[in-house]
Length: 520
Image (cartoon, rainbow, N blue to C red):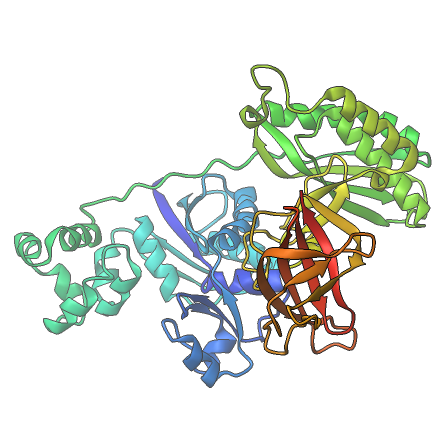
């Protein structure tokens, strides 16, 4: 029995992945943009005239309702992973060539029946998984099977006969070489030379191809004639790291669940440790006997040990019980690592770990008594105002921008006060007064300028007036002006008094000046 290759192709995969993540259906026109040009689009967008390589403005002009999504190779790879897993359930040894395209070996007259029956089985399974547009191709070589899949209709298969690859390629137009790794640069040149079919290119002598088209042309020529076999390697499926435990009958007490889940938590941590990994972000699901699922994502400042996992299970149950989310005994607990890091990155330093373990144990005890959210710590986040850049997260959690818990720091924040940051930020800003050399109050105009140069100021009612030795600003911000409770125009200034102390003052038209922070 000879071995043949099957290619499974999901067209427009970047657009399919973007629509899946955004929760859009197949009928909503969508385009994925890269460098302000269409990288991929779905069938609904093509029906409106959108094409690959089109500028964003032209694409939106042809389809005003077009949903535009930026390109994300990480998203394409991440959402293609479950598709690979579905195929691997039927046949291990899958080799992903890129997101949306995979090849796998099949055996003639194997356990999947004929080649057409094998392709139908794989296609049917992927359609049931939710991949509606999938096409298959079968040939002696992987690159020929890929091109056969590109010639197939939706949910159909094109089979190239044994030893028929050269005949298959010969009948194709020269434009199909643009989809190959070596042919994209040659299509235009071949057309200018009058070559319109792949067979005409294959008929050229090998030495003439080398002298005229160089190494890329020679490699493609040998590849299509079957004299060169590109290497491909099947992937190793990722190990299953999710652990869960079921209770029969269900457990109504959080302490009983925490005690019973201990061995599962140890197995969860040990499974990661076997691959030299630690979990830093945990997805925890708790299911009741009425099929109610309470889930939450937990983060850790360092990494989760077995005791940390058990504590999170107990805290989640207690919180859900207080909020009335538990409608019955617990019958299942599921642990899934959302983020794992190498354990070497969390090894102890030469003189011990950075955190005092006694402090961690003490805080954990307080949290067990008062609740997980009762003890918090400040973390830095993005924002324009000084107070806006501080966010409180529960002790032991790692603030994550991916889940929207905090705003990213590295994004542009127009109107943000430049560094250095103040040392003290007042919880309640105190009233301040700033006057110019004539004694008139300094204000901020609608255009964001000061009405006069600050000469004297009073940072709070309990501090005497003092001359201004230096000042900087203003940095105006006009936020949420379209809402009724919007802050409107707000401006901040840094002011240094004669005594050497520096203050951060904020001006708003409705309340005047106030002191937000100080630089000690």
